[in-house]
Length: 262
Ligand SMILES: [Zn+2]
Ligand SMILES: [Zn+2]
Image (cartoon, rainbow, N blue to C red; front, side, top):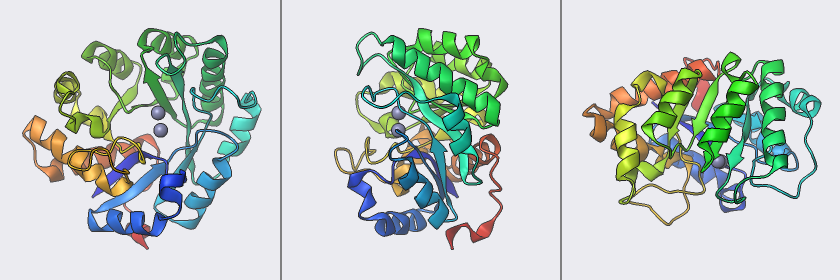
């Protein structure tokens, strides 16, 4: 059993072919997926997917790359998170790659999400790109360890991974670990303790080798698990069961419910 801890099934590349994506999940034994919100405008689509399919879950949040969207408040996030299928707050965080050097509004938005997550008791999905120092600092300042969460699509160093783990966070690896030029990240994936690791697709982006460059989808998370298994000298089953257990634990989902693929 495999789980995709981060996908965007409602994005245009996938929205028109959700049934095919679900079929590939079944074929590859990917039993659950967490569909991630990036703006409050598209959140109703994300929630609708989670309401329609028992094994799809949702998060609520506004991604740090979206500059031209209304300011989100703690109250709004807490209200929208009050739903049985909304299991996380995010994706949120800091991206100094897209928004060069970051911006005050990005850091404020991140703080708002951490406060909302603490208030509603749901873990954070954190996007951190070229911004490790500020991300970890704000996590500490806002008490993020109290609620925990996941550093999604992790591409940082081992030191950064360790710092996040010390704050009570999980590290999630995407298809990037299969990329030829990702030797440094593979080293990190060798070191992160299995009990702190998640896997994801971030689909429709970042399709793993041998599908690189094509549209990614949750079923392809299997290739991420296979690469981790190879790197750690473990079986696919060991990586699959550890990362799935971690997912259920972090997002407090009853993974034993075998009706999940109904
Ligand atoms: Zn992201
Ligand atoms: Zn994402």
